[in-house]
Length: 500
Image 1 (cartoon, rainbow, N blue to C red):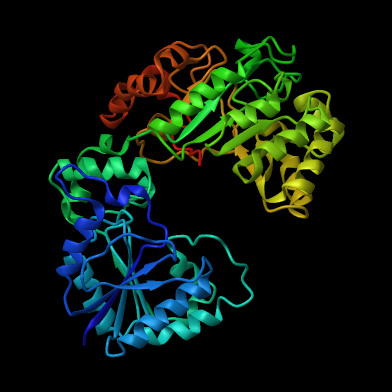
Image 2 (cartoon, rainbow, N blue to C red; image 1 turned 45 degrees about the horizontal axis):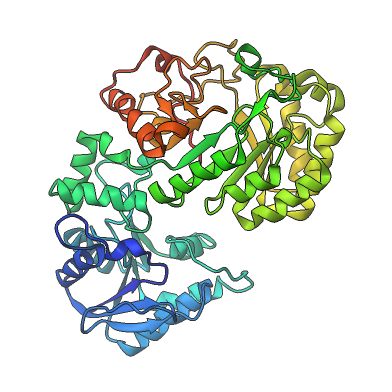
């Protein structure tokens, strides 16, 4: 029987039409792949009402009304109604240049053989494989979207998210990769500059099918370090608290108030470069110093646009009007992490010193004004382990956004007070060298956050620019790829942690 291909183009970006290095774009490559699919009856491209892109002749455009789950499923139902003879719906994304026809064919054959209702692949980099649906399952999926809030956009795995709500009710088949690559978090879509760069590198290496792509990445994980994704900027030198588990007391003015700050204009300059070099990167204030002590916190937040911003704060030192001004200036692009650590005044004083009442007031103000963007954090370590559960239960009544951070001994500089060792059995290249950039108050860039004494300064972002300092970190990541770890990295317990 024929197969209906539904290509989701509702969230396509500018990168879908950009040259991947051989004169072809992501959509050019996808068109070639789709033409190789077996038993193809029709291609339907799901578009937004504003979409003006020209698609190949024969591809039928169908407008998805809005960004809610039910609209997507209703559109798929309508598409199948136009081609009722098709027994399988192959669902993929418009910006997936490496969709593998052979792998698709094997999945379709398995889907039909076992009369599956939903099929997917696991362990492959995202973008190499589609999702498959039996058309008859769509009305049941629609029922699972009832009473769900609408959203402006849908995640790429929306079909699986819907099925998970009643997963035991569906016949599901899974195609497993010989090599499980989920841990690498690879997305072979041309939806961001970072992912487009990775796809371009693979095309330039002459690999564009599933098996050679997997082998190329296994042979050289250096391919995966593309552009910076998370930038931590220390906008203030100094804090009002001397925190018991922080190394700041060993190298900075911990608990001594503000000593100096980065000018708002300099922050704006860094962010403007970042927006050009690596759009969609996240900026974070509060690396070591307290952002509340900056002379212009509202201006700082405004300077971070257009990048998403995270402010990490103790909650101590905020003027109520300045806090509200920062909240309003940041809007939906600003998230808050309040380092609280305790709900008991005495325990709080033991860990963080004075300021408990003000920190609690800041938590309350943020939870009332921007609850979905506010996170309450504690560090789990030996000195207060017996209070961690109480902390979690207390805040669980108010919010789902609770962070229980692992203890960091900073490569052995601090006493090891971890509750348990959760490091992987096998070492792998550092996530932070792959994705993060650390900027101190004077603009200097150390190897990472663990380089507390600045023994590996690779440049100054205010003098050299974002691109230059990012490239200067490349040799260190290459060493990790080759399992050649510098002395500072050998005792590190943070290489496997991940900043979103």
